[in-house]
Image (cartoon, rainbow, N blue to C red; front, side, top):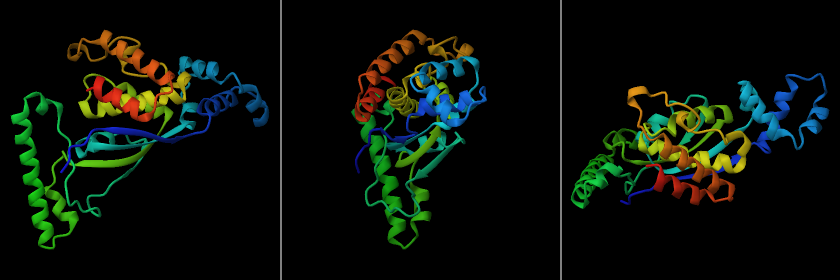
Length: 255
C-alpha cells in the first residue's frame, strides 16, 4: 500500500497553438481568405496573441487545447478539478478497477506533525482498505465496496482544457489560498504550458503575479514570494525542462 506523489504529464496539444490562435484572431478583423491569413501570421503569431490578450479578445484563444495526465493525486482533488466544467475528463474508475492494494496520498499537514502522526494516519487508511477488502470478499461489487474508500485514495486521470479555460484555471488554482494538492498540479501544468506556448501563457498565474490580490483580508500576504516562484518557473520552462522536472519543481515549491 504505497504512498504516491503527484505527477503531471502534458500528453499532447494543438499543433502550433499560438499560430492557430493568431489565425483565428486575424480572421475576425480581415477580409482576406484563410490561406492568405495563414501566411500573414507566420512569424508574427507571438505579437498578435499578446495583442489579443491585451484587448481582452479571448474567444480565439479557445482554439488551442492541451491534454494532460495526472497520477498520484487524490479523489479529493478529483472533486475539485471537475468543478472546472469547460474541460473533458477520463478518470480511473473505482467501479471497474478493483484494488488489491490501496495507493494513497498523505497531506503535508499530517507529515508536519511527525512520524507518529503519519503512522497513525497510515493505520487509519489501512483500516479503510480492510473494510473495502472485506466487502469484496463477501461478493459485494466493487462499485459498492468503494463506499469504504477514503478521499485519500489515489486516482489517475486524463483531461483536456482549452487555453482560455487554462488561463482561468491558473488564475484560481495557482493562488496560495487554493488547496495544496490542486495548487501543485496547477503550477506543474502552468510550467508545461509556458514551455510549449510562452507568449500565450507568460502572463498567466494567480492574480497577484501581475496585479493586486483580489482576496482582501483573506490574502496570504506573500505576493512577492509568488512572483519570485513564477520567475523561477518561467526560467525552468524556457530551459526545456521535462514534465518530470516541472512536476518535481511544483511539489517542492508550491505545496
